[in-house]
Image 1 (cartoon, rainbow, N blue to C red):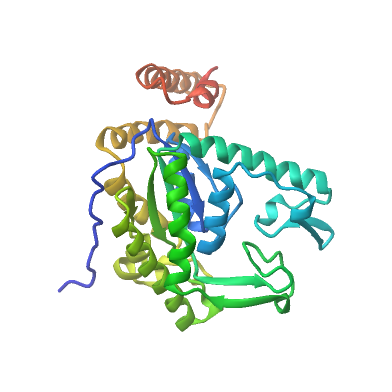
Image 2: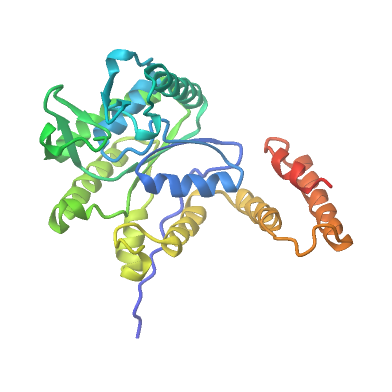
Length: 324
């Protein structure tokens, strides 16, 4: 008797290779995938505005990268003894207004330049709920722990999501015609909204995204949400908060992502990089021993070999690490 039905996503017709550049934007699940891509030496830029959950804020952020927008003092507000931006995560907040603006605008410039050359954009939508600032009548990407009575909370409709994302898709393809886009729905459960409300929110996002994927040839869908909810479907694959997928779940989704979205030669290279990463993380029993020196030399030779075979990948950090 089977107690588990495994789901293997359909392989993409066009796949990611190591020479590609990937911009990742969206929920905290985006950062889990981004970390693993960086560990395997892919060229990645993730969340230039910080973590974003709703499609309106994600669309607004992408539009600002296309336009190479610069933020000014008028875009900031002072709260909790720091300067904040409604469109950015609190990691951009600062006690000094000028410092906050510099952090934001440096990130904007980097995102604009990266997006212009990007081969892929991975967009992870987290929630269809938005918090509209009553005074400004605009959607906040981050509420910055401001009392909720300053916001109107509402659930976007499928039409709202399509309105936000459809326009930015056109803008992106005009700005960078070669770029392809992968949509995912975050498996993180927004239970603070409520069990029923969370499911309604995810349903809105899923319906809207599939409409877009069917409309645009260069759009793809990777079922991260379905892999956790319908394949693993067990609380043991969640962290203690019962909201975020745990390490085992994230690794499971990552393995499925690799098989479906990354080409075979790059997968083989990733295995070699994994060996180097494991050696880097090895704790020497006696760093001064001849055995450890031999270990360093052996791995330095491996790194130099990879560096020669794959000149487009930066192994400088690994080379320095293994040098005696």
